[in-house]
Length: 436
Image (cartoon, rainbow, N blue to C red; front, side, top):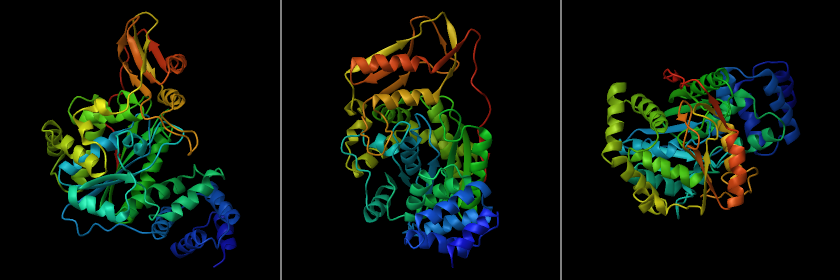
């Protein structure tokens, strides 16, 4: 084959075959197709799009570029979850041990944060000694032994995705929906899970700004999963304000631990319960929604899920004592309280993106991949949407390394809050579910 006709046909909006997409992916990874020609093809995709069949074929070609995990010999169902990212999203740290305690195998490969707050790996590394880099043999042995793992994405899986994403990043083609969907789902398919639940977020703190955009991405990913023979479902969840009360690595780990002990924020547990319920139902481990929810709640309340987290932490070299004593996590010496300065009002909104920017400036995230991440800094919200606050009452705690950085963060963080003189309400209604 020759790439020029493939570029030309995609430029005209024509559909490429599975064989052509497989050839294109293989040749690019082998460096027999140069970057400049692949960049032209990517831009054609950005403007012309891809059919569902093309997107599935591209995803499968990307999976075939590297190793894949096969869990068919495990005696328990294997599940996976992906979130499109958000501010304060520590759901995986709660969900993985919870589902493992329920008897499922949960293999969660996560990434690091860039441009927002820390990613799941950055949060986990706030636990003293915790290792996120396991080779595939270590990963398999751990999952066989304790039923779960929270690790970094193996470079042996889907090398085509890394190569393509690096090129998309410098050619303004990151926002091509078929390429987003294939990038996410290629890693999910290579991970070998039979059941996949996708948490697709929308709002000011999410990659997808609107529910319509999130719905379109969710449908594309569900089509890929189902086309590849995996039980797949997507849940749309809002991200206009941070999830939970904390944003920052050690602070979020503490909040995840609190949630497993039954004392975490309601919105974090609600989302975790929603995702876990779908995983149980799709894996045929619960007959209905009510029994699935009751089972997961009992595992939390009995301490079984927290015990599984301690087992996971210990298996990956971390200090399991943090699960019962979160004060062992890194802490700062400067905590500044941001207080409400106006009359008695209601919080109308808390801008998730603005909160993320504040924590990024404190050092909780990174602007470029080489930036260091401070595990201890961050923000704890003391008031969220629909809360009533009087003058002098706390809006947030700022955890900083110096009094100066805390003071600067306070001025910026104040701009994230909007107030109203009328009672505010949270948006009601169940989360939208697609697929399955």
